[in-house]
Image (tube, rainbow, N blue to C red; front, side, top):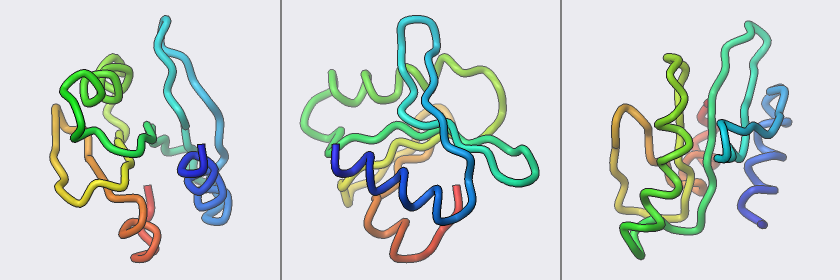
Length: 101
């Protein structure tokens, strides 16, 4: 829960409009919109490396979104991967480097 709160505060501090979304029965933790109406989708988890089941759960809802806006799985993992164009980011490094979604 703390990680989600951190992402929320970080996104708001970078002037993103933040909402929560549903894709069918699946939930997307955050849908972010910038001033130019560009969207980004973010799933937040502590780790996805612990099990294939956890990894699949976090990627599944983002894989259901068929537009071309950026999609992220944000974790505390340092071993990062990319799956179907979805970026796996380390929350701490992302914020420390002041990156944008």
